[in-house]
Image 1 (cartoon, chains in turn brown, cyan):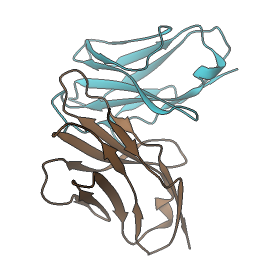
Image 2 (cartoon, each protein chain N blue to C red):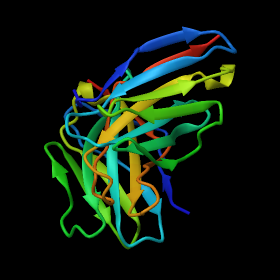
Image 3 (cartoon, chains in turn orange, purple):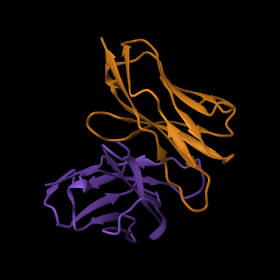
Length: 116
Length: 115
């Protein structure tokens, strides 16, 4: 069964430093997508970055990059030059290619706190 | 701003009552998804509609129902509410229903409190 595991309940990072949030996944599918979302204290879910299972290059979006290691089934989010506004919950999610459902499976999230 | 709108933002009601949550997808998106986020269950998929038709069901209770209208907005109806239904309910939309690359964009959520 598909599953997303985020083993870090909380992380601290100093402003302007880089931080890596871990995500491992379990799937028997060859075709799947991995997503990261940010949830600030205000509650909304903000899409950050996407990585497809066949993508050869690691995804990057501004200060966000994804360290995708397919053999290890990991898709860690790297945030460079952290800012105070990066303090939030971060969720890793997976979507398998399926003709029956397009749902996202979410991990339990990591709470990131950026301090000055 | 994701382009997905949800109303109301907050809803406080009593046990046994019925409420309706509304969602408008991003312009051009045909798929609408409903998710529930609670402290004990995390983020759980409830149901998906594509172009007016139900496509997939997740962990949705029989007391809950949804529909998608011809203008593509969607409503989630929750009835016989219980304390445990208190949660943040998200609507998300995506362009198609085609495969693993389709990104889902979330609305701001409706926070439901059942007293």
